[in-house]
Length: 179
Image (cartoon, rainbow, N blue to C red; front, side):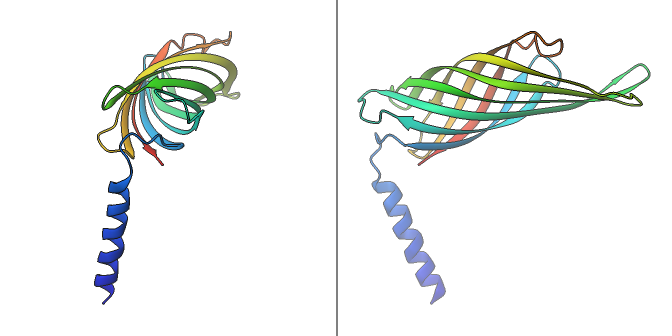
């Protein structure tokens, strides 16, 4: 009896998802990503929350995005080790257009980044904060209306701190769930 009810509920849910029009613009998106960059730490993970704005615009998709990225690496040097941690968070305005299954987009944002270096046997760990602006370009693919894999390049420029000023950009791979 329970299997019959579960099967009916799952069938109804699948039917409702399939009934969603393919061209529908999602209002909210939650995503996760793997991020690569040249400076240490070199790889990390990110999360994002997006909200569509001006949903009545026919071709253009305008969104606001909040993002958080976390990078950590343990590195060795002559005489010890260091635990490097970098995280950043920010807001961006994104504009994109749909071209079939592909949606290229561009964006502009601001945020804050923190770099921590905990060096073995050091009295004072190094820590810096910086304000940054970024420009991004990317593309989403929408094989099904809810799941959107994406690739993005984010060029980031921070103000003057020593450890984060060389931050040029990062390559971001991920997936966004839109609803």
